[in-house]
Image (cartoon, rainbow, N blue to C red; front, side):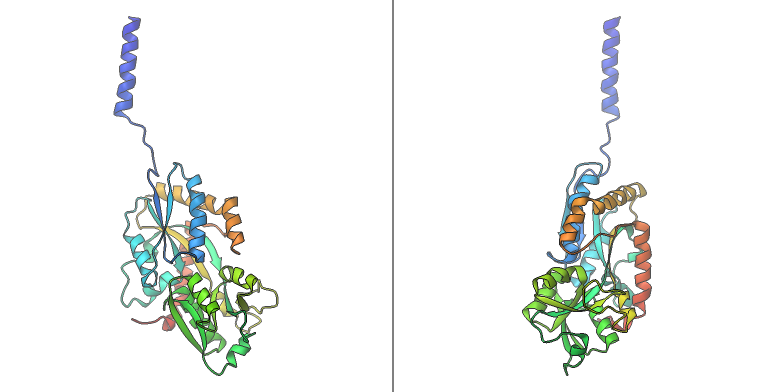
Length: 319
């Protein structure tokens, strides 16, 4: 009898294992993290730092694979993320307002609607700085105005965040400008300014940080409410406080329709990854810092940015 009970118990255990397998749960395979710019820029740096930490905070051991997808003023990357299956295996970092501009103009209408993305987190916002070559005779905004010709500024493609910042900022400050665009990312157009492709550039302050420290660039204006660079005037001192509204936002999202349970897993893991000491250390070394906020806040930032840049739609290049 005892032997029969043992046999029946073994069979029951076998049936339980066979009929009701243990579910591995999400994630079960690698996650693609799309970057809408080329390697080497601030977006690339943020994603690679976050990806390494994100792998440690997800429930299962998988790889998070940063994937650069530059081109078509970011619409290539955004469209790829929008059309991806909403299964949690494709996420993307978004350059706002750059990713919004095609949608604001609506001609041609892009094949995506940013308001429909599943928003997971906000990495933070960066203010812009106006910089010139370290050996330039230009020492101030007034020097730029006195050039007697349009100042040449390097940026990424027409209609991107850096392009819009350059157009709006120079027009507000009354500086005639000629925009040299077409670079694939912030590192390329900054190197272009150092190389002498133009007189200078407008870029987010963290990206200018190392080039300012090396002496390759000189920051002559900080487009923020208060200056973070000693001796350099801010938007208020320049007499144009509205320049501080030209902030660049970095949001993380997933395709529309992402299941809520997966959204919560990703949001929690992303927030933890951004607060991870190693991530903080890497970004501090790059002159940047994380300002982690959740998906709800990311959606609010998107809406506010859309409203602000809609007022400046006349600066957005028409096809």
